[in-house]
Length: 153
Image (tube, rainbow, N blue to C red; front, side, top):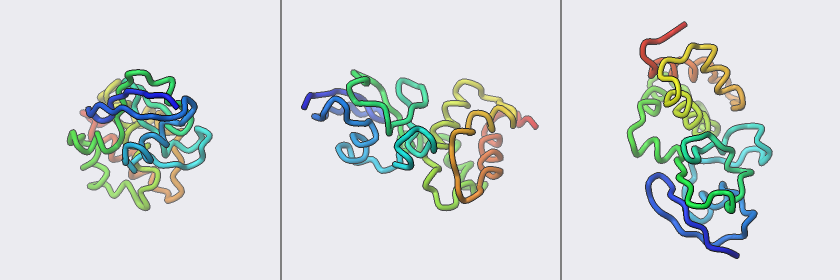
């Protein structure tokens, strides 16, 4: 076991874990955040997506020892900061069961930070790695585009 320091949603944390422990386990089991979800454990569904130093990462596979002094943002951080995507998802009913929503919200926030006015095709491409079995994809895309300014086709 080793000690690791990281900042999660602006709050510094020091955790003791095996070096190979996935970030997802640290977030959920040690820090107590349940927004990032375990879906597949193989970077195939996107339910565990978080921002690490501003970049989307699959928390299910990134080991804690690769995150020395990293800054991590989860969907809880987006909500705390009042990210407009949260309200847009509610307004567009873009989350049915909600299991995939946290990863999609984080990925969409990353897209909008890099490109405040994405096209529909750019949104679709950015969210392509996120699986949603409920079929809310069209509403998710509308919600993301509603936050961009001006909305593009």
